[in-house]
Image (tube, rainbow, N blue to C red; front, side, top):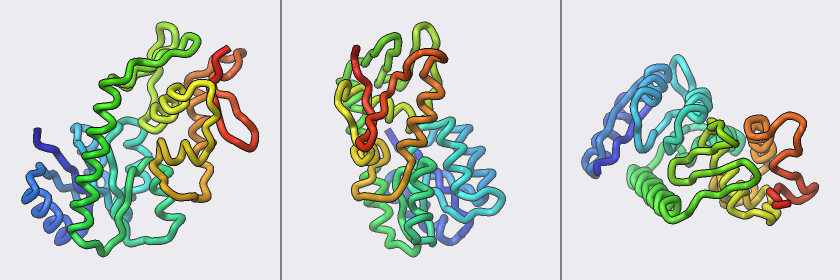
Length: 229
């Protein structure tokens, strides 16, 4: 099946060049030149991957990523001329899956796109083979990426679901922040970020029941764990 890619990039010469190269590789491509139009298109249609510029008119890439992360699980590669570590970390923290710094070689971009689709296929295959996990009244279905507590379906973002899945798949084992950064955010090196703590807080706010013990336990100085009683 042909993969559909959305490019959100205001530099028209660059977006046209990248679009032609991607089409030559066999992908279907849609191009938007403003942040607002790009977000609307991304929310309206189901794309397999989004190439997202950081500096855009009307709405920047950070805000688009934040909004998409709440609604979709689309893989995002951020394209940015800002190469500071903080800008890159900020983009990844908000939900981008990868980044490439401008100016870039088209061969590198194409390689990153192929790698993204390979990772998606591996994850889809794992979900198909992996049965659901459950803890107390919480049930996680990796194939449909759904979470149910009792009779209530709990809407989670992509990152929240992946974080919960990692913890439930490693029941009774403390997962360090570094492990979770690697597993959920694909960070392959140490970075200074509190994104794990932030998302654990988001997750607890959605799955925990008022007045009852949290599903996720904090192990001070180490990380987090879901422990069977």
